Amino acid sequence: MRQFDPTPQFFSTSALDFDPDPSSPLPMECLGSLHQLFDGDGESLDLLQEWFGYCLICDTSQQKMLLIVGPRRSGKGTIARVLTRLVGPANVCGPATSSLAGAFGLQPLLTKSLAIVSDARFHGENIQTVVERLLCISGEDTLTVDRKHMTSVTLKLPTRFVFLTNEFPRLTDASGALAGRFVILRLTESFYGKKDPLLTAKLLVELTGILNWAIEGCHRLRERGHFVMPGSVREVVQEIEDLSSPVAAFVRKECVVGPGRRVWVDDLYDAWESWCEREGRTLVSTKQAFGRNLAAAVAGVSRRRGAGDVPFYEGIDLKENQP
Image (cartoon, rainbow, N blue to C red; front, side, top):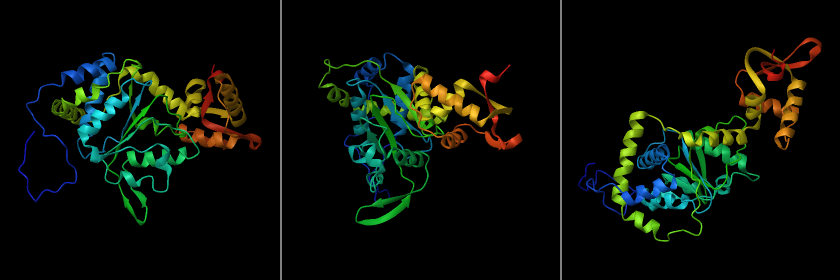
């Protein structure tokens, strides 16, 4: 860490309300609290450390969003408050999930490097618009942002997202692309009734040490080149992917995919209906919609017509048809 003298050659609208100190010791109070929150899971602690460091720099190349899942009073808000102070409150916004679909819903993100969505709810009539916008923003795509009483601007938003939620998100995304954009942390213990109202204040005393800890995480992330998902959330990842794309879950559990595989369209759709009934899922797709979702979820599957003009899918078959 180097300190530079103020100069008019460098202009920044971003500022912190504390002075960095490379000699600050490790934030032992903070690390002890995190160790308790994550039940000693070192991989989760490493991911959080790297995410804190990632939020310090002007870099969205990882194309990831952080999802923290846990019961109420499990520490999600404490993590968010410390991260807000670390990045600088002026650089953080707190949109609601539903507001991201609004006509001017992206305007607050224009100058913010971090958006923290508390109590995230991934459902509602506009959820498809939310999914599309999150895919664009996290994927570093160019967006046209409408501004109230101002002209629109077209740009790549600099915003990283953190979602705090009590429940696994149900995303409307047949391809599963958005689910793949999340790095996930899971908190399992609730401290409801045992909350320390002074905990955040105690942790913020160590802010300079937390900054040094985050910088160490940033260096580790850059050396590796990518985030590593904790082993403790593998089942969570699979469940979120299945909730995002039920068709992909059906294919994974009931089908085989590959060259030379074939199945009649009606047979596959009947199997899909039966699977939905067994799984207690509400069948919301017609045969045509199922075909579109299948094409989005599984690469290399195509619909063709056979003898008597009867349609079939090529590149996929049911496991029950295998010898």
